[in-house]
Image 1 (cartoon, one colour):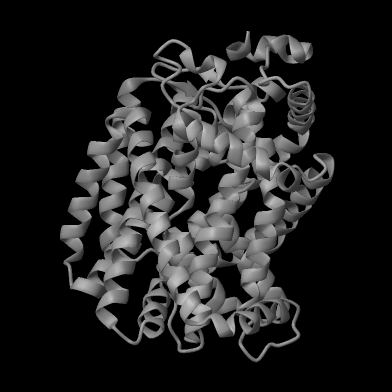
Image 2 (cartoon, rainbow, N blue to C red; image 1 turned 120 degrees about the vertical axis):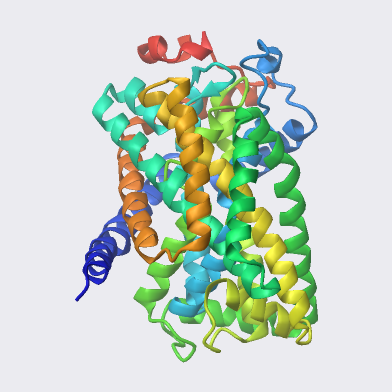
Length: 478
C-alpha cells in the first residue's frame, strides 16, 4: 500500500469516529440544551429576527450606529451577509446532493432538524461574540477565540481554536470551494482548470487585500442576488412538479425513520449524512459565524444573535431545501450521479433535458456561492490570526498563502485535504461547543434583558454594568 493510501485510510478512520459519532452526538445534545434553556428562542422570536433584519437592511439605526468610523462601519446587515457568504457555497449545491446520494432522501429531514435545533446554538455563539468583541484597527473583531479568552481566561484553549479555524476555513475549505468551481466550469464549458485557478487566485487577492469592509460590501451585493435567483429556479421546478410534493415530503420523512429504505440510505446513514452536511452548510454551533457576527455595530448583543440565528434558516430551510427539492422532483438521485454533477443533472431533467441550461446555471451559481465563501472564509482566518499575533506582515503572508491554496485547490485532487478538513472541523466544533456551554448563561441573561426592554417599549440597549461580574471583559459596551 502506498503512503498516500495509508494516509487516506488513517484520516478516514479518525474522521469517521470524530464526525460520525462524537461531533454529531455533542452537536445535537448542545442544540437541544440551548433550545430548552432559551425556551425555543429560534421559534418564538422569528418575527423579531425578521424585523431586525429588515431594519438593518435599510440602514443600521441602532444608537451605536453613529460610533466612530473606525468601529461603526460594518452594519448589522453587512455582518449577516458576510456570514451567509460563508454558509452559502459548495455545501448547498454539492453537499446536499452528496447527502441525498449517500444517505437517501431521509438525509434532508435530519438536515432540517439540525437547522431548527442548531439555530439556538447559533444564537448563543453569536450573542457571546458580540458581548466579548474588541475594537480592531478598522472594525470590531471577535469570535470564539475572544470569548474563550475573555470569558473563560484560557489562552491555550483560545489559541487552539484560532489555529483550527484558520486551518479549516482559511486553507482546507477554501481548497474545496475552488476545486468545486473548477470542476463545474470544466464540466460545463471545458474551461481549463489552470486558467480558472489563476482567475480565482487573482480575484481572491484583490478582494481580501481591501480588508473586512471590502469583503462585507462584496458579500452584501452578490449573495442575496444569487440566492434569490437559485430559489426562484427551485420554485419553478416545484411548480412544474406540484402534484408530486406530498409524495416527496412522505419520502423524506419515511426514509428518515427507515419506513421506506428502497430509495437508499439506512436510518443511521441518513441521520449522519444529514447532520454532517447540514453543519458544513449552516455552520450552527461550529464557531465560524460568530467571527462575522462580532463585526456588527448594534446597541444590544442579542440583536445580532437573533439575526445570525435567522441565517441558519436562510441557509438550510431555503437554499439547501431548494437543492433538495430540485433533486427529488427530478427523481434522478438513484442514477449514480453525486455532488455538483447530480444537481446539474437534476435541473436538466426537471426542465426537459436541456443539458446546456442546467450546466450553465449551476456553474454560474456555484461560482458566486463558492467564491463568496472563499472570501468570507479568508476573513475568519484573518481575525483569528490577529488574535494570536497581530502583525501586518503575518496577515500579508496569510493573504498570499490563501491565494496559493485557492490556486492549488482548483487544479488538484482533494481527497486527503477533505478528510483533513473533516477532522479540523470536528475539533473546532467541539472546542466551540464546550466554550458556549460554559458561557451560555451570559447569553441567556442578555436574552432576558433584551425581552424585558422590548416589553417596556424600548429599543434595547446594553451596557457592561448589566452583568457586572464580566464588566471588565466587555470593553466595547462601556
